[in-house]
Length: 251
Ligand SMILES: [Ca+2]
Ligand SMILES: [Ca+2]
Image 1 (cartoon, rainbow, N blue to C red):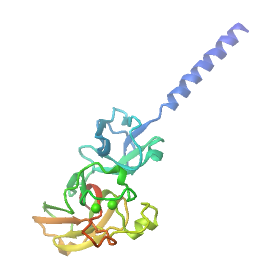
Image 2: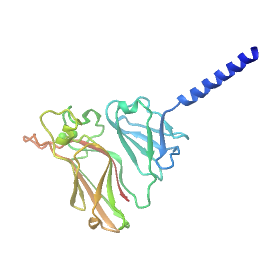
Image 3: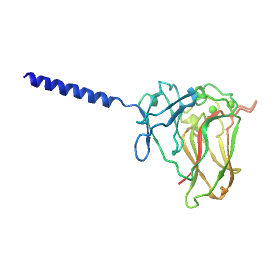
C-alpha cells in the first residue's frame, strides 16, 4: 500500500510538471511553410519605441505594451519584412506570426514606418491615438532599381500595413468614429501612373504592377499620396495615415 501511494504521488507530480510545460505558450515567430521556430528575429512596435528579439524557440515578450490598434513588425535576414496591425484584444492571446522566406527577386522599398499627412487630425479619425511619428508630408516617393523582371510572373507592390485611412468606406466599416466627414483615398503611383486607390486600413495589401510600366534594369519610382478631407473647404487637410513595409514581390 505504501509503495502504491508513493507511485501515485510520483505520477501526480509528473503530470503536474507536464501540465506546467504545456501552459508556457507565448508569442512566437515561425516559418510560414516549415512551421519551425525562428530565433533572433527582431520584433518592433514603433508606437512604443519597443523592440526585442526572439529566443532560440522563436518566443518573444510584448510586456503588455499594446493598448489600442498598432503595427507590429518582424525583421529577419532571409525573410520578407512582416507587419501586422494588432490591438489589445489580439495581443492578449498568444501571437503566432508566420513569416515567409524572401525570394531573390523581392525588393524592399521601405522597411520602416512612415506617417503621411500634416499632423492635423481629429481624435475620432482612424487610429488617431496610435500615431507615433511626425508626418513626412502629404506624399512619399522613392526610386529603386529593378534589376530584372520575371516576365512570366505577376509583380505586386505590397503594403505591409496601413492605418489611419478615413475614407467613406473605412468609416462605413467602423474603422473610425468620425460622424460628419471623410477623406479621398490615398493614391498609389508607379512610374507616374496611378495604379491604385487604397480604401481601407489593413495588412498585406497587394497591388498589381502592370508589366508594361516596369523599367527593367533601370530606376523605377513609387509614390503614395495621402487623401484629403473632403468636408474641409477652408484649408487643405490631408488625411493623416501611417504605413509600414513597402516591397515588390513577384509571384
Ligand atoms: Ca490632416
Ligand atoms: Ca486619418
